[in-house]
Length: 273
Image (cartoon, rainbow, N blue to C red; front, side, top):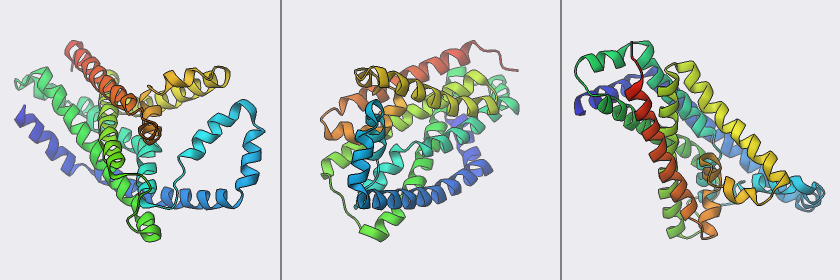
């Protein structure tokens, strides 16, 4: 497996799509951080009016409050946290992973690897680990971009304990690895770059819309929906602060395991031409 993995790492280093998406991640991180800061300042100026408006929304108020809860406050960690939980970075990573894995099918390099004697398990796990590396690098660049305005405005500061920060970072890492496995699974199942990217973006949006509709009529469903991978990512810090860190831990471990197992199963069974 080491030979094929080294080849995949070389492809990542030379990939134009990876470089472009990393540049986009950095710039978007800065822009989103500035926009969140403006939104937070405006919210503070109109807090009473905002509170009355939300209270008048009835069943929709909970959804609105969840959105407001992720807005950063006046410390650097808030900007780092929001960059990891606003899901924009996942869409960027989904594009890169979809291109990286999907193009292997269209260019015939997967078939070439198999004909050279590499096992299907080695080929799949090489792609999976490469996708995880792409995910981590993309998130890191996005976080650095998002942290720039925070450092300028507030220096190095945080309103939660160092222990909670470390726990959040560990859980985010696990969840992002699970997301990478999820995207790899979709790319293997679809075998086409366009389909892989479309499914990776559409599925979280559709599932989130369904969850929000159900939660309007059944508030108890929110306890279940917290285990949906992409909602877990959004609520990670909130869960840590409420003493429910087991939720992102379980969610990340389950999605990572199931996605990897499903992707490997499909890859072993599919014909590669």
